[in-house]
Length: 128
Image 1 (spheres, one colour):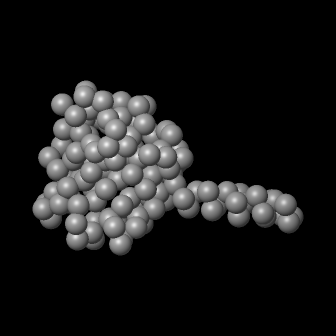
Image 2 (image 1 turned 90 degrees about the vertical axis):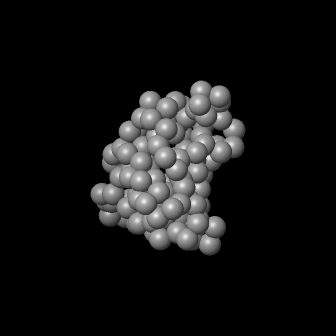
């Protein structure tokens, strides 16, 4: 992945820091933050944050504010998370999706699952 050399190494470090920020879970407030691009190639990097979210003692908020692109693999992972949280009596709150992400949520039907709600700026179509 990384070629040898100081500049190449620094680019790799910067890339890895960027990738690490794509999906993170903050246990203190039960917020799963999605940013950048999420697709099948980043699916493996989501696992740790999603697993930690399962242990939340409250409803889990998925902050989609900084998510620019996602494919159906993220919606599937969120649906699985919602299902497992629902079995524990908790909800999955989707906060502030951008219009293209909101459309993907609608196409996948994620917003229709029990225990899933869109909160924050959203159009009427995603809420009904």
